[in-house]
Image (cartoon, rainbow, N blue to C red; front, side, top):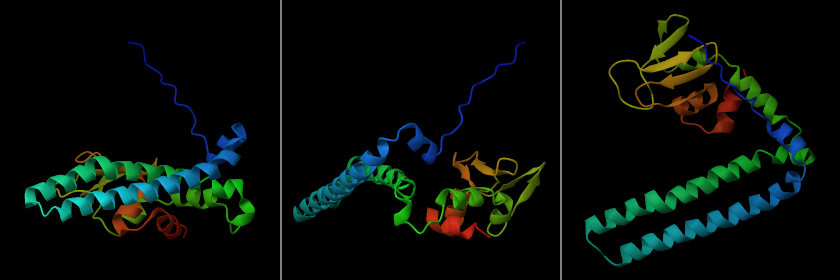
Length: 189
């Protein structure tokens, strides 16, 4: 039987993307402003929609239905805009290094990603050795038997119960209820 080989392209960094597409340095700040405006408009739309529903003094089912509709269709658009804005903002320290503190954010992120995942996890989870890896009860959902696996070689995790996955930074965010930047700062030591 022949063994299959899969090509996995190398992930490009934001810096290398800007080297390949230098014209993006001029477009990104414009797109950031467009996203900020679109987010404000979407927030006004949500507020107006919900105020209109509550002003009708509808029954509780109608209010619930309207709220669920807003969550599924309007809030998902807002979340997508917010994610795209965050992605675009990651390019700013590369485009305008003089406007930032001079700290290389990508270096700090790389240091954080190399922090041993089992060390951060053992502060909040009861780890059970599983070969060279570890397993634990998943912090993302309630369970009786451990389905969260920590892979020490790749410094990543995966839950077979809820399919959550990520690296040491995203696990730190979940365990401590903090944002990305705070998790990166926490993993510097």
